[in-house]
Length: 203
Figure 1 (tube, rainbow, N blue to C red):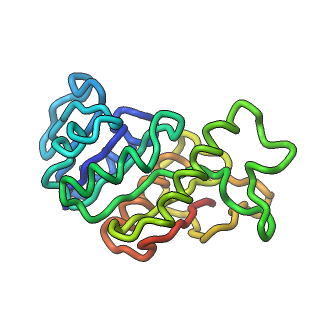
Figure 2: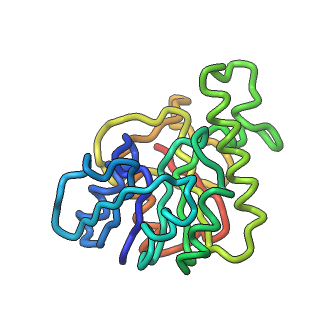
């Protein structure tokens, strides 16, 4: 598979890059400064600003799927989707946020009183991105939300998948490592089970 990865140098994007290469996929790593990406086998680095539709369309040309792993505060679905359509790419996978997950029917995590104020703008933008995707008819999109605590850790391959509800372990902790998140995302790219849907991953 040829995967175009937006945000390839970030915490999550770099793990997705490693997992994709580990599985033998071709990767087009997209960043504002592609010079920061070290040359490797099966890896092509391209510079593009996500908000520049023509430049992004050129960068993702030839990809089977685009993976968006950037901050929602920096761009919207309206920035990304036109580029996919211009480039003729039919699939989009988005590294989502936990804020839009439900902790009770109709009640999102981001709307709870204890949700950290400093994370609220990013979480709110992520929910808006997801809502925009839900109205998209032409692109086969997938939005994968991590658990509440999303951190560097181990690649264990042991985790659970859910739908729109926040996952937590037996002790009540809601978390997932970047490394295991990357596994779940690549599994979905290889064997799609959540097209035009959001799902979540956690321990």
